[in-house]
Length: 72
Image 1: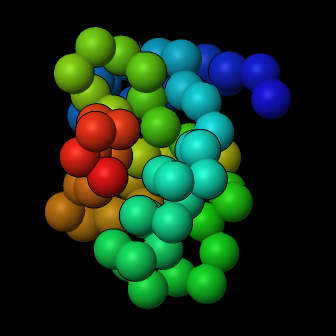
Image 2 (image 1 turned 180 degrees about the vertical axis):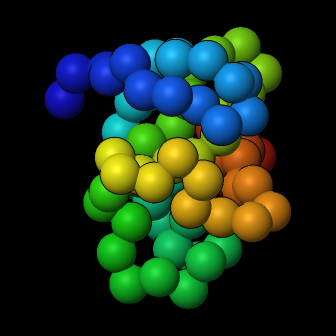
């Protein structure tokens, strides 16, 4: 799936976001207890990695950031 430009709450600007990988989805399910996390995107801005859905700019309070791949 293509990356999308969306507003990032933590960056405060429109940034490129991407869908989560299978490993990232598993981590987020475990972290949040949700049954599905298909609707989530991750900000690709350097050092950000903030999570949002296609409709919600800030689905978590406090903000949840995806760890680096080696930390999953």
